[in-house]
Image (cartoon, rainbow, N blue to C red; front, side):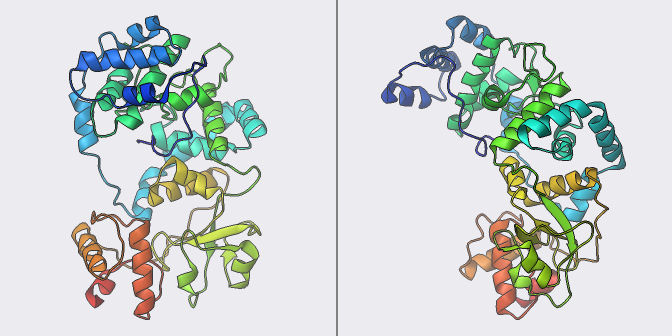
Length: 397
């Protein structure tokens, strides 16, 4: 997954140097053209930032354009599965069993992660499972080639050129082998799939060998993920997601991300926890598949999942997976109304757009803007405003 736009600010170079803004802009503006000249410009920028020419040469020598990377970048799939379908696929019995085993196996490392960064073991473990199946599927793209390809390509050089510079810094530290280090097609490395800049800034040596090796070292991956999640704003000791039940005559227009109430207020409206107690902090009531499907209170820590990945379905699945690893029961799937097919969703978005709603791109994805528009239209039509589009709603429009 590409998280470059979502990540924390770029780590400062280890060696402080004064580089003029005009020179920095000139470096950043370079993309496309002759590939060797492009690499020469990358080396020049790296050296200007305090990295050694030797490390730059070692990293960039033999770098190649990877056409498969460009193909993946151009053909990125869109996330169109509904919550029940995706969560059932993602949270398998194997992952539950393996997740529990990993939390036990690395219990001391997870304890350290929670003590130092406040991030519980189930939260890290759920990401670990969904990203790479606990390190089993890390990607086989040469990392330097992937980053060089995407930095040279003029679609998003501002995202990937800094990552290529960071890869040079990792080579200088002895934490990346430019010939053998592999990962995802977008340059992410290791068991928790992180980009070079973030490995430099948040990387932790969990096994004490003097290096940060997110590919081979699970302790390194666990502590690095904890440091990264804390930096995104994780609130120690607070919940992230909690399944609840909701009365059938509920004020559905109050649901959805961004509409928050204190837990006590939700409780007074009839919201009840399926397990545990509702925390009296701000929370949103989210309905991934409408009022007849599962319902959750999303607390402030849920927003950290959206920083990691912007897909509502992926993040809700990851957050729910973490609650399961922490001991929560399986959700009550309910009996949701049938959703829309891809052509029907595009038809709905086109109609909503013609009515003046901003749904973003007509892409068949039930994103935040489309959910908001659906909820507003449902309210206008006197329907339960649960933001879940159905064939019946489309027919009414």
